[in-house]
Image: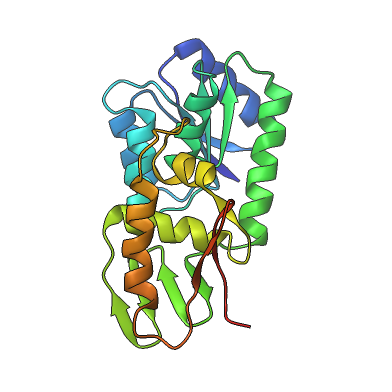
Length: 225
């Protein structure tokens, strides 16, 4: 099994390379983000251990570049930044797990093993479907039946959130956090406006509506009965 460690702190990097080597892994190391990106895109790695704050290129920018290039190698983010917001940003940037420094090597090893088991067990979902509505996460395209539907980036994120929770009520709080990155209610009608536009695009001129308002609760995207 081959791992890539992208870490600029020499002591931490040496500790990781030594420990992972003793655990039976082949390990490559980069001390900066740009070279780490080069290695990650040119090598065949089973997992990446990635510091968040790196010279040359920030760890989250590195992750974003990998995911944009459709490289799905499992990535474990290491960072001294441990707040909830920091962890959420890391995971949303494309990280598969997040471990706060200082850390126990045994925990890091266990998390790596879990990541690689998940990666081997099931390929990443690239398409979401509800009835005849299909969203492609790789091409960022949407169609209902044979008809292509043009969505703005925020509308795409909104639909993705609804489709990932298909058949269940998605509350306004969930939408604000997952689509707008708000952790408070701005007391505006921004959700209503975007939901109206999305409903117009995916339901208008179709026999069955998929997007439903659940009064006092939120919204639900579901297949017709």
